[in-house]
Image: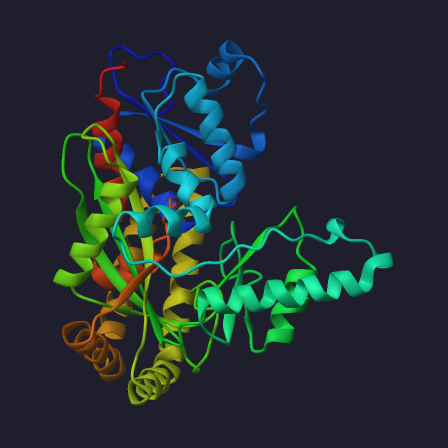
Length: 405
């Protein structure tokens, strides 16, 4: 329902890309099922003027906006603009600021007692010294590299963007010379930082939510597992396999502590999917997890292919809503769920999950790697059977009922 006239009805706005993710389609359908007003805005069709009245005319009379743009920078920009124009946005720009700046995340979290990686951020850029001062430049880079390595305490180390996603531009540096070269080509337009390389075969993705007036709630978690040792990029859009991890007290304790930093006030709200990495995993467990991940990878690829077919059906129903298409989507969801259940009941999945839970029980040292403000959750949803789109809907309705201050 688009409903131009409010008639005292709550209206939820969803701003999405034209070619969006299956998560976004599911969220839209979840909101529609509640019977509240729904306005879907396609980002590519939106032109923003630097005028508050014009912005409100473009977006409409909305009680809350779910900002689902895939570009983090554009999402942050438009969220700031919407908030300045009097809208409530999920997630708020204040939460998104942590997702946009990993160095800030580590600084604030570490200062608040939430375990986080060491991070080093040399300010050197190419413009500081010209080619005519090659000797001075070489000596400075040597001293900076030594200082960076001393601060993070290890080689190899990792270079990564302060504002990055999907593992882009993340790389392992294996020598002091590598660090010198990395510092020497740094750009003010794309700032990079350095941190220790945690040679773990998995990271843990945790989805949590905080409703206004309530305490943070840990919803679900999975592990993102590497198929090869020292696999620096484990984002599932790139490589690796997901493994369901049932709720664990350590994860809950750490995640709740992190959310209290992100949303410190009673009226604050958010929903995030955050990444935690083990500080150290025994070599024998690294080899086992990677070996079983390689075995289960073909099954995961089939699950991803099924999900893509399902996304295409959702896309059709958004373009032409009919009972017949709705039945097709429901049938495709049922078939996909059965495939997901086969995946998590496989021997390989159960073995990896047991190894990770055993590690959590015996030697848990988790560090917060990333705050993800625009949760992309198909793997979490598939493997935990938690309908996270309904959590988004409930949060949107709770936020829409808040009084405007």
